[in-house]
Length: 181
Image 1 (cartoon, one colour):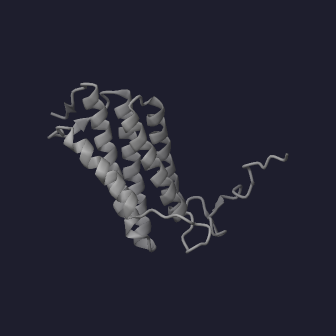
Image 2 (cartoon, rainbow, N blue to C red; image 1 turned 30 degrees about the vertical axis):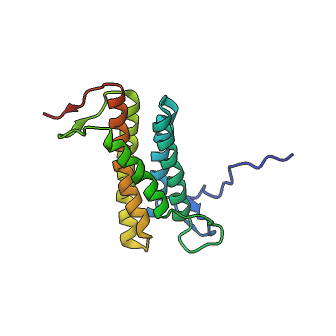
Image 3 (cartoon, rainbow, N blue to C red; image 1 turned 60 degrees about the vertical axis):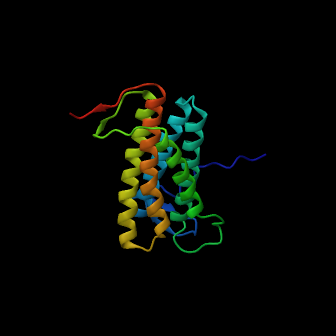
């Protein structure tokens, strides 16, 4: 059995490949957007690894799966045959439905929250901050190229969703909200 290496050396000159075979610079806005979403997914994975609550863990895994769909689409900017699935309104509704359920169980803070009451909520808040950066990159990419609007809608909702999951973790462990003033 021959093991295929993940190291192709094709990126040694500062380029990366898209799913359609096109090569772009590693500093390209598209690459930056995908990388930022990958970074957010890594923090979400860290949160899942620290999580003992199955409902929160499942919700985090759902967002990770959706981010993979988004990244695949962004890595294939032209319509390409390789891409079988795309993010749709179905995935958006999935997180909106969970969001409504979580919101119904919480009394949301009325002031800005200072993060860091619990390790898990802090990691989720970090993931949310990275998602917000990914949203800014995606909005910038959308201004330069045609991006399906569902991607912008989803990533906007994802940051709200993660904010709520962090507050739900704190609420579930009777951690008080700390406010700016």
